[in-house]
Each structure stands twice: as C-alpha cells, then as structure tokens.
Length: 143
Ligand SMILES: [Zn+2]
Image 1: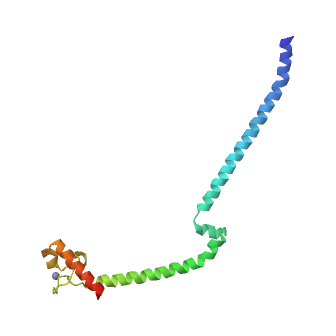
Image 2 (image 1 turned 90 degrees about the vertical axis):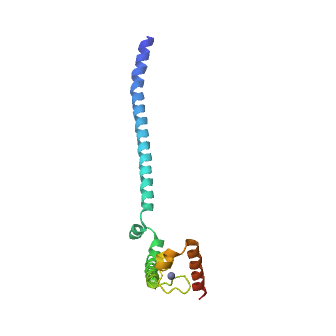
Image 3 (image 1 turned 30 degrees about the horizontal axis):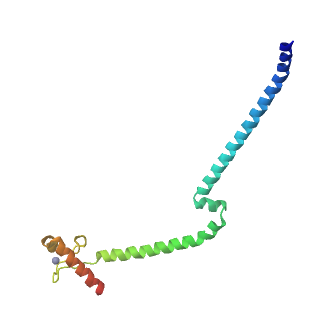
C-alpha cells in the first residue's frame, strides 16, 4: 500500500518536476543569453568609442569633433608651412661654408668634423679641438 501510494505521488510529481526543471532551464538559458547579449553590446560600444574620430564625425556622433574639424585643418596647414620654412632655413644653414675653429686657419671647415678643416681635424688632439670649437661657438653667439 505504502509503495503504491509512493508510486502515485511519483507519477504525479514527476511531470511537474520535469516541467519545473525545464522552466528553470529555460529561464537560466534566457538570462545567460541576456548577459551574453549585453556583454556583446558593451564590447560593441567600447569598440565604437575607440574608432578613429573621422568615423565619429561622419556618423555625427560627436558635435565637438565636428566643430573642431575646420580649425584643425587650418592649424595643420599652418604647421606644415612653418615646418617647411624651418626646413628651408636648416637646409640653407647646412649649405653655408664653415670656418675652421683654429685661429687664422683659412681652409674650409667640415661640419661633421666639429668644423675643423681636413688638416686640423687630423693634427689636433680631441681636448684641444673641443676647446677651440667651444671658443668658436662662444664667439659666434657673441657676434
Ligand atoms: Zn684648420
């Protein structure tokens, strides 16, 4: 009798328990999908935020980027012009002949030899060359 009662309860509970388990599984699965989906969304948003500003401008996402666009171009143009001027000045300066730091020496100096001429570059010891070159720099600064 007891075992048959138990069988009856089991028969009645088993479908309920099964359905309950299925419901739980469905809810858990849905929650997991939601979590994954929101995680993916966050990833997408962070990716969108790290995209280059050009694309943000195109999408009209940032008004500040739009407002900055024109001045940035003008500044870049100005910078390019200034850099070109500086480069031209550097080029002119590098073409200018240099004088040998040895007083009274008339031979042309060599830039990558601390301005010393070919003869003094070889004949003078380094400490003396450094001293003479420092004197020449000082004189040029004073002039
Ligand atoms: Zn010399």
